[in-house]
Structures are given as structure tokens and as C-alpha cells.
Length: 175
Image 1 (cartoon, rainbow, N blue to C red):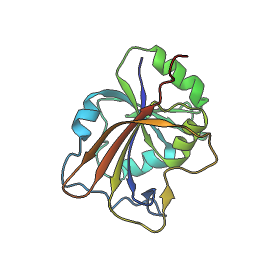
Image 2 (image 1 turned 180 degrees about the horizontal axis):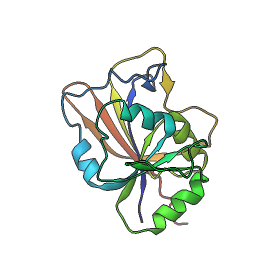
Image 3 (image 1 turned 135 degrees about the horizontal axis):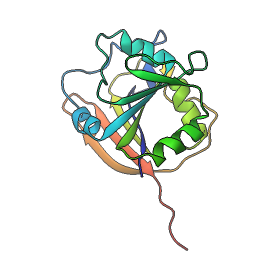
Image 4 (image 1 turned 45 degrees about the vertical axis):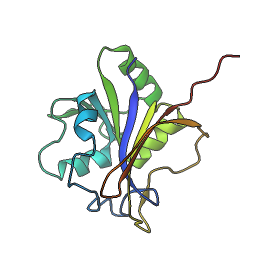
């Protein structure tokens, strides 16, 4: 079954962006496993604000994927890269998982991540923790949402001090 993977960068203090949405602090000196991850997905999901930010970087970075932007104000619209949806995330993900394909990347932002966490829709978390404290910014996790116990699948360290942590759902043991 297709998995929903939250693959995202965060500061040590849990911020995914500065208060104004800037991500100028992200390390770009090497791949950090992005190429291998990207080869395993064929669908990207993001919120409208994240999509607008991505477009501001220049060329659309995910041209060979199906893209969906969750937006209450642009639902039903389409542009060259994505379809805009306002569906209930749980219903939308159930329909996506029923289709053939590779894994699904939950790109962000924070509001969409929160909506997915509330509904227990994230199967795997890949967090690239940058060794810096922003002091303030947009938090990756904002509550309240249900407690989840996860299983560490992998921890990778890089010479820059970045640590990439991969967590999956904890499997329940049979009685």
C-alpha cells in the first residue's frame, strides 16, 4: 500500500521556517538523501502557502509528480503543475492509496501537517534536523493532536551536523 511520508527539514528547536516563512537557513551543500527519497514517490501534497512559496523559488521543483494543493479558496482549480483540492484529508488519502503508484510525499506546510496528524494519516516521518536554533518561527508540530508512539527506523548523521531521523508507525504486538 502507498505510504504518506512527511519528509521535511526542521531546526533543532522544531521550526520549519522563520516567522515570515523564509527557509534561507536550510543546508543545500549536498543531497542529504533527497534523490533516493524522491525516486520513491510520485505524488506531492502541500498547502496553498507552501505551494506559493515553492513557486517563488523559480522552476517548479516536482514536474514529474502528481501534485495536489489543499486550499479552501482555490478548490477545483488547476494549473500547469497541480490540482487544488478542498476534500477532507482522510477521504482524499483513502482514494489516493487505492490508486496504483509509489509513495506520497507530504511536503508541508505546518497547517496541512497538523491536519494529517489529527487524522493519523502520516505513515512515516523523515526529519532532517539542522544543527541550529532559530529562536522563533513556524513550528513543525503544533497541538493539540493525539499522542503517537513511533518506531525509529533509521538515524543518519552528516559531516555538517545535520541528523536525519526516520520514524515509522509502531507495530502492535500480537497478544
